[in-house]
Image 1 (spheres, rainbow, N blue to C red):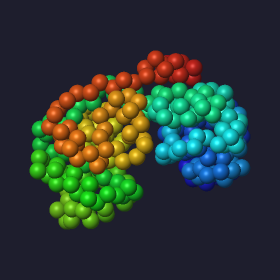
Image 2: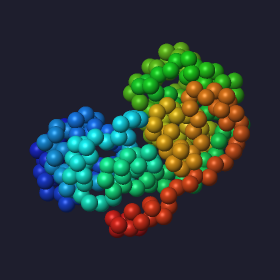
Image 3: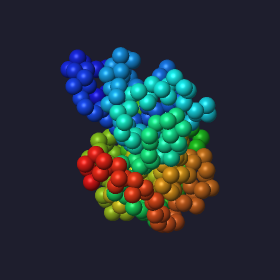
Image 4: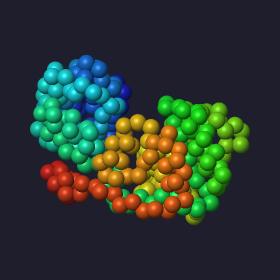
Length: 269
C-alpha cells in the first residue's frame, strides 16, 4: 500500500493478523515525529502490535540514536516478530532501542553469490540519479566510460533522462525505461553495468552481468559493508578506474543461516 489509504485498505489493516512493510527507507531515529511513511498517524496506528519490517533500512545516516519516545512507539507497533533489515547499521540501531532485529541483507541479493567486475565488454549500461546530482563527478565517470566502450543509459527514475541529457546532450543513447527493456539490454553479449542505481546493479548481478555499483548514500554503502559488495564511492575516481577492466570476482558474504532461520519462522523455508 503506497500513499494515502482508502477505507478498504484501512479495513484490511484492522482485520490483518500481521502487517509487513517491505523494501523501504522509512526507519529513522525520530520516526514517531518525522517519518517518510506517507500515512497519517492514525493509519499507522492500525498496525499496532502487528508490524514487521522486511528488507528495510535507515533513511540516511543519523548520529543521535533512536529517541526514547520513538523507540517506545516502534516497540508498540511491533508484532513480536524479529524485524529483518538490509544492513548491519540498521540492525544495530534497532537493537539498541530494544527492538528485535536481524541483518538479512536485501532480499534481492539472496540468490546472488558473486559479483563480477567489468573487464573489456563492448558496451556498458549506465544509470545516474536525478535526486542526487553531482555533475562534475558524473561527467568525469561518463568520460572515462566513453573512452572504453559504447555507453547506453537506462533512465530508472522519472527525472533521470533529463539530467543525463543535460550532461551528455543529444548524443546520449537510451534504453527504454521499462524493466523488460533493461533486462533485454543486459542479456546482450558483451554488456556490463556501471551506475548509481543500487537495484539496477543488483538486477544486472542477478542476470550474471559484470557490474560496478557506485555509492552515493547509506543504502549501497551499508549493504557493501555488510556483505562485501564492491561498491566504491562515486567520488573515488581512482578506485573506479582501477575497478574497471579488472574482471575481478567478489564473493558475497550473505547471512545465509539467519536468512534460513527467519524464513523458517514465517513458514517460508
